[in-house]
Length: 161
Image 1: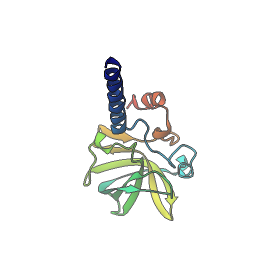
Image 2: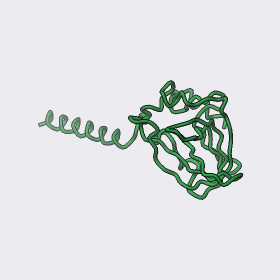
Image 3: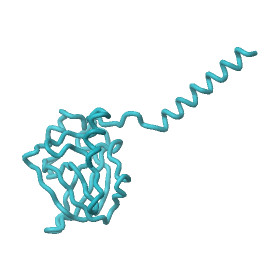
């Protein structure tokens, strides 16, 4: 009887551990977004630029077939009212809630222009909302994607915000 009780307890612990693990994503899905991928090679620091504008739309993207879902913004450029597409990164990594970003917000975006599927897009390095709130997704100097960094390197990179 005691063996049965121990076996039942162990079984319950294994099941609970599985449920807890299923509810949290230990490693985000970044398939196709990795450093050195076809998509990553589009980022050219020589094409660096910034823009200010209003977020018109926040939506999911898949830049190339087989890539993990990503997050993009459609931003109305403050200067000429043109609508620009901004790619932020893989959806499992990009946390828009961390800065409370929503449609209608005024933002400043720093990134590099690239052509994706025949369209010019800004591959974001960071999105600033207000003076002190920003979401960084790449290293400024070379565009290295934060989602490809080991946790220790990411902490070091983001701790000096």
